[in-house]
Image 1 (cartoon, rainbow, N blue to C red):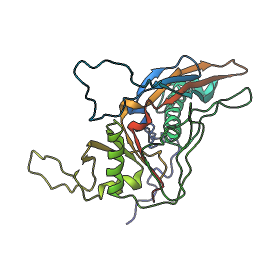
Image 2: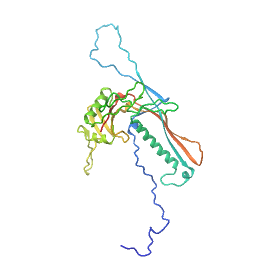
Image 3: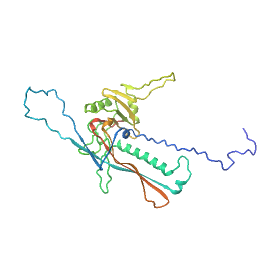
Image 4: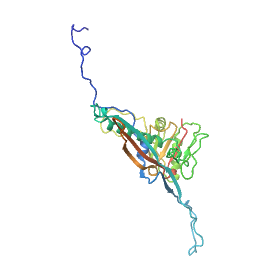
Length: 318
């Protein structure tokens, strides 16, 4: 193929306008299933507390004589106090005055765009911390205060590998769990976790897992919903994933979480965990020291596990 001599092409001319799409495409995941499904509350100070109580064990021998005189009384059991700390998370933005007034593609205000982006990053950080294995730290003038994570609370309904150990605490989760020898995740483990939580009074609604364990659940041979209704005659869809698992102790949604460690599965009752905000998300303008706009984004929050016995943790998975 040839072109006629002296044909003007795009390779020769100068001044062709750029074709820049008026949009910005961000593929980074922003979903935060753990903190988004829990309950939210307000803390009144950095260390917030709550009380735990339980009923006496049920018996089949609570019969008395007709007209019996009461000479002794049931044992009194005091409530248990438990707490956690709020931690401060921060992101900063610095935009020059020139950049802010320049005409841009994809956003009108660079400052506004960066603030929105940093807000999403803060939320991802909160999710990552919530599913990490992190103990609470009291904090001091030169020590950062840290909120204990979900894993630091779970110590009753757990399954772990050899040499693994649950966290030990009394008034707040000041210790992490110890990772053990990794093991294969089985359907029996999922059933055991559901049974453990149900026996303690919980009713998990979510099985939360990373990508590896989510796929393992989809391969379980038990009662899992792998089909959907199709109104019109169309191509047959092949279902290779389980989004709902039907157990003896309730139906749970199987939720993938990108921020979880690749060795754990949580069985969660959303009625019994959440976040406490001392200072919800806010933006603070910082003093100008030059030709630029400075902003700091803050959130001060803590993780609250109302009753750790309502949940289950399956650990040290391959």
